[in-house]
Image (cartoon, rainbow, N blue to C red; front, side, top):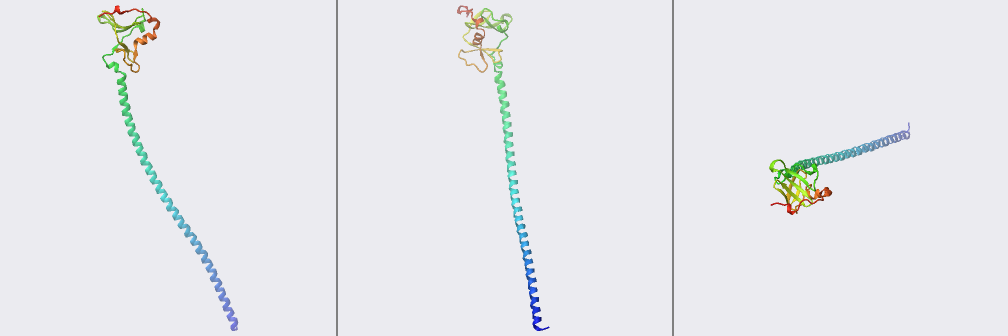
Length: 210
């Protein structure tokens, strides 16, 4: 083999080595890019995980805060309910006391019946306040006004005769007295309800006694 031919073989061999080296460099570059991509996605994934963990912590903190606020509202509602129940009970007790004020007050006198049951006679509407024996006495309402009648006779009173809300008790008040809820001015009520029957004058000032 000549020297030139030997040199050609060496050159060819070197070319082949260079080509193999370039191929290896290309493969290494591709692998490096792949590794870089994987590393990039791993980093991004870690960032997303950290972000989600932070958001999750914020959500937990918000839920805990919301729960505390709900508990505070529940306590306020409970306290308000207790206060309302106390006020309601107190109001009911007060209402019951006010509702029965005429029963507790000795100035109110119980009425035991009268012309509403027996009928109006001669323009007289009678209200029985006490019956039997010498202690009987009635209120008598006529067109002329309100009278008290007993064993001594009959006398006109310069008062307003007021009926309790339940209609079972009567009391004498000044003529300018302002009626409470559901109280009734008996003279006005009788004259309005029994206008025809009451349109008879029975008693005059001469009928009064001292």
